[in-house]
Amino acid sequence: MLEFEEMTERIIAAAIEVHKALIPGFLESIYENALSMEFKSRSISYKR
Image (cartoon, rainbow, N blue to C red):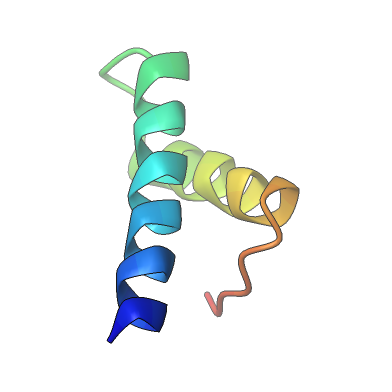
């Protein structure tokens, strides 16, 4: 269970970082690319 809590915290932290960096109003694809880059910088594996 702790494993999932830690991963959830890492994912949420990445999403918050993207949210702080970008202003509202962009297309969803912009946020998706930014989150992808943030995941890579934090070594979080993902599938698009």
